[in-house]
Length: 422
Image (cartoon, rainbow, N blue to C red; front, side, top):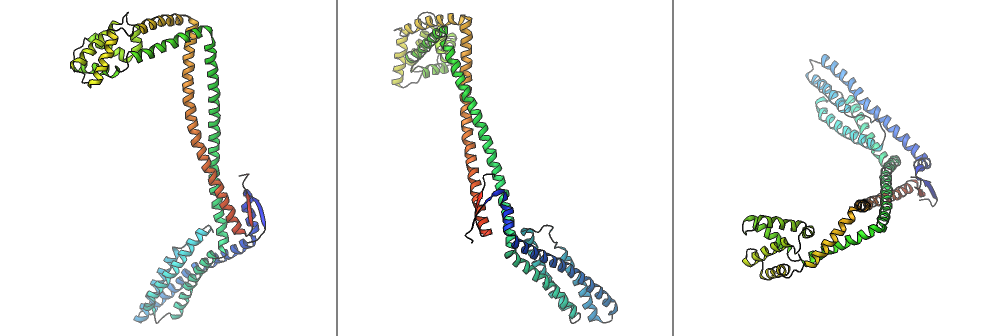
């Protein structure tokens, strides 16, 4: 390989190689075209010669009817000159001159030459001792076709390899174009997702700013304080009043509806309300929450009866917790405080300005949740697309390196391919 170095833009690579290899290409094309011309002549000469022999055989069959041996020989020759042209008709010169088409042509010609020689040999003993010179000429035509097939094979392995290498380069360049298109598509998709994610992040900042502005309103500050106190009361109720009772209460509904344990309908319906919305149902209770106590009294009785089928340790905890609420009035302070907070809360919401701000706060928070979900989706999509872009970029770079090495070997010059414009 030459020690010379050269840098070539990838878009100009094919032209550069063709110019660098112009002598080899010209010689290869001349040899190829010459071979194709000779192969075409050979393919045409065999049927033409068969036509001549066929007429000769027909004339001899007519003239030599009395000579049984020569008649049979002429008849065999007539048959042979029908078979061989049919075989030749199966081979056509390809309209294109690429290496793949030429390889196929070479296989077809070699097969035709071998098959024609075999058929000629099979019929030869029917034709002898007549037409000796004709059969020698016939055999020479077939041998020439076989020889041309061998020459075409040699050409494809030798001088024709230059043209084949240029065809391979074309295939690599087409593959590169496809990979580059895939990479460009991934890049556009990534940029689009990045823009949408940036817009979503800006929207999130805007929503946060609006929430803060709403909270900075004096009336809303007072409302938010009461709202937080109500939430704390709800958490306290669930922790102090309903801890360990959730599953037993649901089980009590189940055994009552199955008829395994009697319970007044109104008590069961109230129990369902407590299971579904414990804090709101608790707030709507009268002082000393009589409905809850009635429910827990029923629960205690069911536990004592064994109908709940609880383990001894769990049964004791459920019973003790129920009695604390029933006899000890352990939820009275929570009930009084929560009802007072609820009255204050309702007075705030009666103010149109606060009600409007509260509604907008809920809307903004919902928009924020939707925005957060969108950002999560976009981040996942961005990760997926970025990985696709990375893989496509890697494939493009690998193929460019492969083309660079391929072109270096083909030209004999150490090439550096510039793909920045691709």
